[in-house]
Length: 220
Image 1 (spheres, helix red, strand yellow):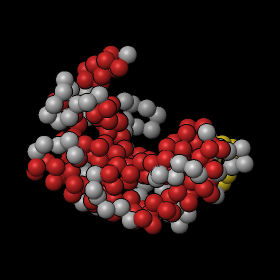
Image 2 (cartoon, one colour):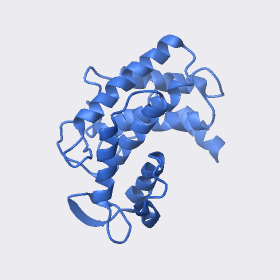
Image 3 (tube, rainbow, N blue to C red):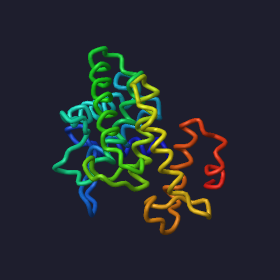
Image 4 (cartoon, rainbow, N blue to C red):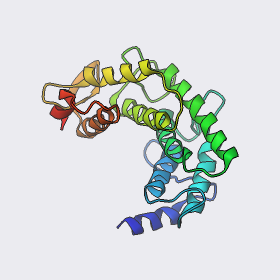
């Protein structure tokens, strides 16, 4: 099943290195490319090694070319909710950083990640979360979790991540916890528990080393 999935991804990569799938809200090439790239990395491929090295290299070039001067990694003309692709790109590039054998390209990845972390830090809401765009001044669970996962990968790659940003984001997850153990879509508009966000929140607590958090146990 894994082999067939990777073969499908390899066949469906665009000539510019991206993956696109038309949905009701657009194609989201940066988000899709970062996630597809992670699939290849998880299979042991790098930009120079493995059966799908060429696909990883082309995906990397596309993601790096999508990084703008503000630090946002996005193709704004195709992505109305840019913070998803931004977070997934931090995750992909953070995982790739230590595998890149070209010193110049590794330095380029490091520069993009540094600016991306700064953009995420500037975009954090008063409650500690993030919304669909950097200037939204609001927050919701799925984007918040995406940023947390991306920041963790950057930290693992040696990029400085302000501790207050992580602490505030983990605080957002605590504010979003409901009595049944689930995590709500938004901290300030509780509503019902969202199983996908709840599962991802557990991963974020574990990534932060907070294995004994009673909220994580209750979420599980």
